[in-house]
Length: 493
Ligand code: AHR
Image (cartoon, rainbow, N blue to C red; front, side, top):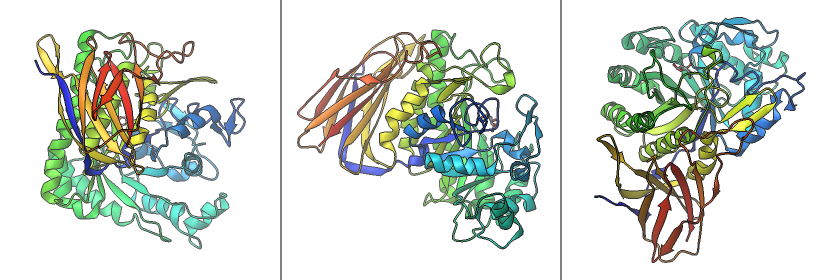
């Protein structure tokens, strides 16, 4: 039987873990924006210029590098001009058929990014929009002044242009973004992106709408026809234990079988990245074009009693392990994966935060993002792992997954997941290249039961705790991980 062991080469750096891998996504969907983030200036819920204070403070602690908005499917029916100046409402056909007030628009989104000190990633409308509409939005946001759009921005209260860093040319254009064939979208991408211009010193990183899961043909066509005109190409993959249409499975009331299959399906992200990257390598051997995984995470059945179009789901230690394992995969592919945006920040799918009126709770996934922020922009260290087997009903997968990085001060952060729902994992990790270790500390996120989650009555059932079940002798780290746990060990040289 294999044992859990790893060798971390502390002096071999394999590249930088782009902090944008820790990006977020907030769509006009259910209570994601309204109530979740935006309560408006007349709300009794404490807020800063309409952004709810508790959520803002919690999100700030995550050091979010980049925030994607306004969709998702919503992006390809969003007409930005209705969301500035005098607002015009619209029907949100994708998500519950609600009336969208457009009270949260470009100005509010940019203000939110300023408050969070993160970069904006705006997704434009190709599906139901025009080239003119897209080009005017970019002019509105980034042109200094003296043009119809930039003057309109000033009239609406914003004198200076904003810095717009990332722009997506449509979303899921193979589906909700227009049901296009890849060849057709590739031509549209070439045309639309031409008018996404750099004004007033602003430089836009252009992201083409990419493949759904294993649609390798989409990646092939986009890369062969438009790679030279893009900076990034997206990929969407959700971890769904059941069947997308017939029943995805409950977020909290799940079986051991569902636990195992969720871990398997989360691990599939690795294979997907490898296969899409192999295609990208053929057209872009220098890895200039980033693979942008701008939608990922768990997708379960909505919570009973909630609007099914709002995609509101609870979040357990299972979600935490899916998130942590995904980060380890993204790190491994850090030369190609330049950004990832979990779906979604608040109240939607695998959320960081859930709200109920004026109450708020942090999910286990939130805690993973907080623990893992030490990896942002750090150097990935070469790591060889041999994992014991996690076996369930004759199927197997590695019991642990690991990632290690070195920050600018030389501290080494090692994160380890034990995805096994039943068995503890003992691991021995050699820290090769270190002469002596002066200090070390540990943090753990785990739960006694696989269905454990935080509720509004008990918001702190799952939260990080100090961890000391490890020893370091002669640069050998021995660590004891309980079942279903995520550990961060920091070693100062
Ligand atoms: O994140 C929810 C939805 O999932 C997005 O709007 C869409 O792009 C994807 O299908």
